[in-house]
Image 1: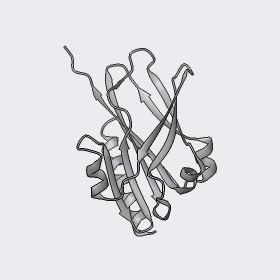
Image 2: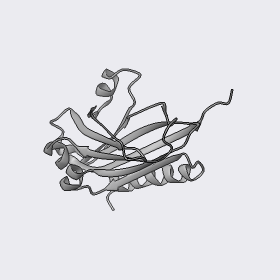
Image 3: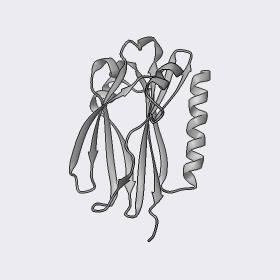
Image 4: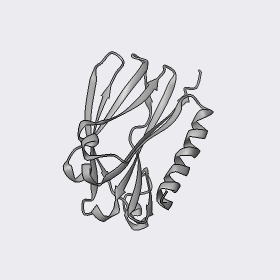
Length: 168
């Protein structure tokens, strides 16, 4: 196993162990993604409960030889338990050095790690999500908007963390 895959595997294992302690936290990773996977969509579950506030994060392993595009453009289709669907496209900035990260400002929720021919980027996607009307298993379907991103994304991960709302 390559050193960069070992590193990513270690990070995933650490997140999974941490998530086992909290049923409102999970990290899912799809390795060795193919362009077809990213054009059809990769599905992640987000089980939501009332009284919990969630934050979500996305991680992407990119082929570092194909960093000529400054963003990763992903479309999210969020499907509720009652099958209503919501879509949005987000252009996440590709960050490969500290200068780029600093240019985004102190509030940017971006992490990066470069390992050989791969670049890992992690972005905060949504914060303060509450489920007041339709609790249950929500599905998040992530697709790459264009062929450039479909070809350069090597792995895609999604995580969520829920915190119990304070009782008044």
